Image 1 (cartoon, rainbow, N blue to C red):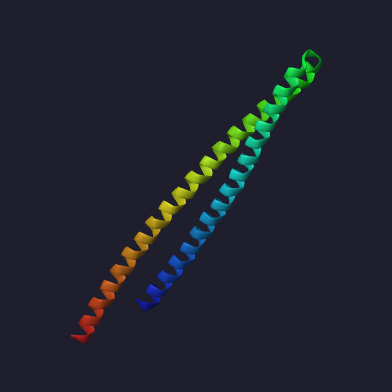
Image 2: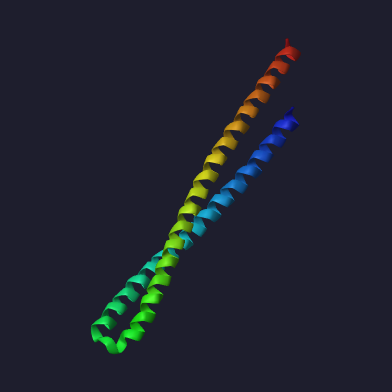
Length: 127
């Protein structure tokens, strides 16, 4: 039973390490996506400002304005996609954390049961 207990502890430790690494990886990915989202939003604001400035210059720049507006639309679509991806990463991170808590709880329950069995066996051998 001691070996089983030790094996369970090692398995739990390995599982816990994997979950922590995965959560850290998702957090890093989420941070990178958040930075990309901020950059994309800044680019959208810059492009919108540039589009408005060109529109004020008149019809001679209408063709350029159409191109800038298309870029703004593409950037806006990319911002929306990045926002969705960031939300998914955040949700995945939370789900992994919940799963880790459930796994720990299950391991703790199994460990308590095995300790109880060991204590009972020790009592029978000692008594």
